[in-house]
Length: 239
Image (cartoon, rainbow, N blue to C red; front, side, top):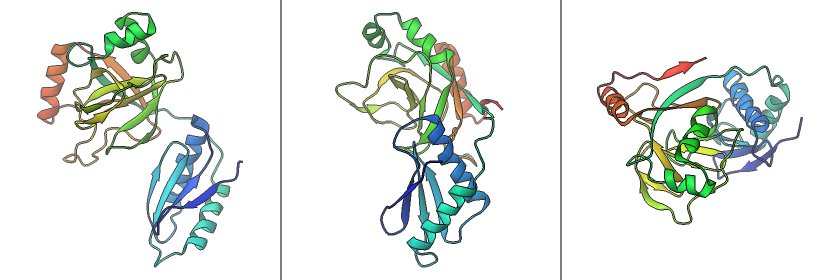
């Protein structure tokens, strides 16, 4: 197993680097280390935050010093089990594509020399793996491994993309949890709340999940949105 690198990140955190590229194998190692530290906790560690190829470990320096923490993390990385057969947790996310909800859909189709329907097919036919949550609370950075788009992000970012926007570039896909700046292409919008602090578990998705986008009509969008606001909607989860 490739040796890890532990970098100082301020006076209360270290970044455990598991590799130098973005791929599922390294990301699964990151999530395995996170699970190992949760199963066998280190006294003084307060939180672990996974990213593409690293794990941020927050700790209390008055309880454990950097050198001791680094040694303990290395021990956990050596004792964690091999990568077992993956068990998928798939969360179905309804998306209304195009029109007012997806202002970049037709432009993306032009870039690909294809139709809007083909852009939607690629987005809905293949499940997307959630590498991490970041930028905004609960925001899933995900990728699919089949039929990537050829276009990249927009040349000029929007100052505000609406909450729920489904945004894409190449093989990557993201869902915007709040109204916020975004430089990716908006092809649709979900009526779901990706982050809702009134729920016991605020985040709809978590690192290691898979997203299955489902195309819905504007009428279905509005009905699901009504259910979400009334706290009646529950996501379809396949495990």
